[in-house]
Amino acid sequence: MTKSNANILTDIFGRKHNYLRISLTERCNLRCTYCMPADGIQLSPKSHIMTYEEIYTIAKEFVDNGVTKIRLTGGEPLVRKDAALIMEKLASLPIQLTLTTNGVIVDKFIDHFKKCGIKTLNVSLDSLDTSKNKEITRRSYFEKVYQNIILLVNEGFQVKVNCVLMKGFNDNEIIDFINLSKELPIHVRFIEFMPFDGNQWNMDKLVSLKEILSEVHSNFKENEIIKLKDAPNDTTKSYQITGYKGTFAIISSVTNPFCDGCNRIRLTANGQIKNCLFSSTESDLLTPLRAGKSIAPIIQKTIQAKLKIRNGMDTLDKFKQVDGHNNRSMIAIGG
Ligand code: SAM
Ligand code: SF4
Image (tube, rainbow, N blue to C red):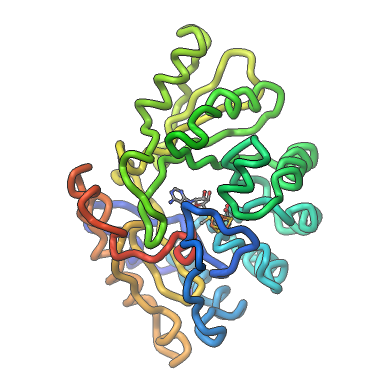
């Protein structure tokens, strides 16, 4: 297909969606409490999961229409058996390819990442305390993940460390995480805990942007805290402590949403697109694709239906009222 001029990825507010996040699988080798219910989720039948050819075909349609960046996510993208093949296929497209991973098995993919031109990776790590890490992930891989973060840094990758903060659990580690960036050139990102199906969310567990900044200001002098410039589509507010090699940032989807500059669209492992992380509806691309139909009109319609702020929950009150948000668990969306 040749490049389209139809601008099917521009919504009614003029937002251009040039960043596609593809979930490769609903499966994972961890069981994070904030991401999935204790008894797991109902997995889609294997026949409903996109094959690697289908992932490539859908991704190419997006790229032909203006997508310039693709992030692979999940579930844990690297547990998919053909993850390496998918990365290789997508790397042939004119895009920036990246991924979000829990880091457990990244050491097995170092050469492959390099081969596919992957330069940056987001790795999730929510506690620097072994037992808390076990509690949150319901698995014991802290050492492995920590060593793999160091390995990625040493191998020259740009590493962003994603940390979901929960009150009374890991909010006492904010400064420890920032101090990780003293010697390591990593970018730590504190993420406000968000509500998804089965994750027992409530506002009291959330550590807000304001609270995180207050903790930072009580531990560092004013002139040590440097506010960095954020890019227009950035979901983060970025900072650096003077003299530190790395940086840190806050992703405040709940208390301070960043929808104005949203350029993201999500494709789930079973071939549905979501125009917003908080959207309760999805559009099926896989069935029409398998029937040999054009998927471009469905993509266009889904983008046109995107609401201005957080799927219509434009105030914190509206956001708090929606229980579970009629949404999937995060593990089945692809964060
Ligand atoms: N398995 C990979 C990982 O953990 O990085 C990729 C998938 S995971 C769903 C993607 C990101 O979503 C992770 O950084 C995770 O911390 C974040 N996430 C999951 N549930 C969340 C929630 N309830 N609130 C905020 N972030 C969440
Ligand atoms: Fe798995 Fe990532 Fe969800 Fe944790 S956050 S359960 S590692 S998909």
